[in-house]
Image (cartoon, rainbow, N blue to C red; front, side, top):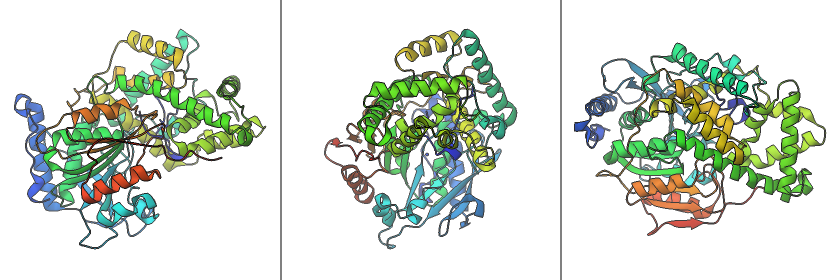
Length: 531
């Protein structure tokens, strides 16, 4: 359940091997979590978060030029914020979180504080967020006048005490096993890989695993708020970043000023995370078909067939060829899926993926190898890829209690695969380490409205594959006074970064003036890609 990345930075791979591309001062001290008195552990953690925030408010952030190899140009600045590994023991072991910022582009009078961003994952880095200013991103130009743009690497990610589960070069090696099993023996092999992956996480990162939870990342977010000198947090979360925001809003309702959540994870306890991934399989099938319809409508450009069925037949033929003899010796069905999956994720991938597919059918196999095979020479990219998947697994496994019965996994995924074969089995293997997870699994936070929660802006497309539309509806119900903007008949994951004036103007109005429509709004879709 994660956002796709360009090939060199894939947040990749199920344990079994499918690359799956698949966010102060007086206000430092928070009120204890609502109802915490009856939950001593959470009470201790709430108190620990208060202590850590007060400490961070005093320390602040020492801003300086970013390290050269972080790829963050001036005038972006970088710094560190210390947080407890375990909030129940705030004076115990501390870990460092990497943060960066760029000042608001408007006047001092126009400034409204910091806007902190999380892009999703779990396992995504937010450090590139300030680059929306340095690269002159027009969609965000108005917000940039009012806000410092602040990014961070969440605990375990990137530069923030990174975790690992397997040697990164081993991790990206190809070709991997076909995620769709032909036999019980294939399933047994995948189960063995999943178990070995979980054991690798314990061996390489065991001390961190019990503390790699969304509530802890939400507490970290509050410590970052305090370190920035902000009484209240302005927050933008996309994909998994919406769940982080939902948990933050539940634990720290009085510490929020404005929050935009975009492409929403269903926050209900029943969905986090096993059921959410099954729901995702269904939504991916729908969006895959949307892409195939578009490819068929643009047959003059791609020559892949004039109907969805014709395009699907060519996909199945490609898959069968790669299964029998991996293309270029390295691109099998798992690698194909990793590459092609970006099309149902993002409309920006529609043309590139169709172009590579078209070239292959016309006889150019090298384009496909270049696009879908791992780059073994990209050591830094492979480290980031492996780290991203380690964090994804650690957070989802720790956030909730997962089914331990293989019979349940097998039954649910076999049933789904009949009608939704595009993603089902690869998603199952990616998450299966959670069935044998070697560290504590928690009960998810009950996301709800508590006193002090401001009005939240929710943005969602109806055809989103990674975070199906129902998640936005569920969060809207749970956060009183929230407003939902629906982008109808669209499905690109992450709506607020796209050019759609109906959405963009409302996000700006909310961030700049705090204004929301009197009722929920439905917007027409953004422009469809052109070949």
